[in-house]
Image (cartoon, rainbow, N blue to C red; front, side, top):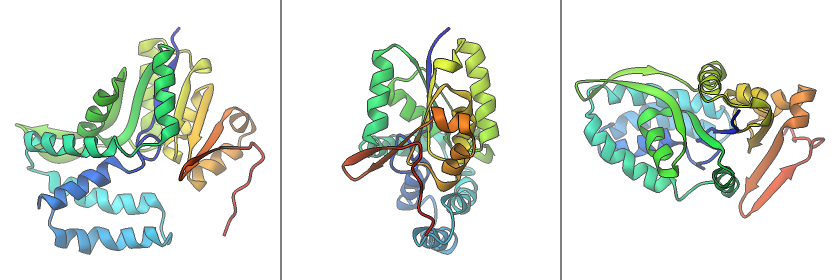
Amino acid sequence: MKIGAFFDIDGTIARDSLMIEHFKKLVNFEIIDQKLYYEKVYPAYQKYEKRKIDYDDYLNELVDVYKYNLKGFSSEFNEFISNQVISQVKEKVYRYTRKMIEFHKENNHLIFFISGSPDFLVKEMAESYGVTEYRASLYLKKSGMYTGEVVPMWDKNSKKAVIDKIVESYDIDVDNSYCYGDTSGDFSMINMMGKPTAINPTKELFELIRANKKINEKTKIIIERKDVIYDFPKNGKILDI
């Protein structure tokens, strides 16, 4: 059996969301109207910045505008924009997960990127790191144009389904394999793998881990802030302010 390492991307490897950075580029290139951004997305962003809504709520507002405006957009032109996004994002990654990718490569582990971001962005990210394989949300195309239809993969059930297939296909030893994630959507793989790590976990993921004694014992929690990386203790608590 083989040892695998499963990585989420947004907030786990990349400090920024691939889709949000791509969205900003589409606004800059006037593919998405700035007026639409300020009317539909920016109010949600302001609420998130003030921590009045969760990140996922902000993301949901953005996704609706995003996928609607991709309808009829050329996939060839989008490839050009996607390359720019990945070049930018690759310079802003967490040191801990970057080091762990190097560790897994040095030990000949199979490396998989499992992300809810669009497939065309995750593909570029996966190729830039030279990983074994990737899975992402599918943005459907017809005749070189996006249809506006999406097969999402940002929830824990969708991620579990694709990981199950990868485990079977590559004969992965889950008890000795690794995973890295930051949100509740990554909980299924944290539950599945023998050596999970939560990177700057959301409160929801943190509480899911703490609620299960077995999962809490096996899960490493890493907090990376500024120029310091913290290995969070098993009995550590978060402040509910």
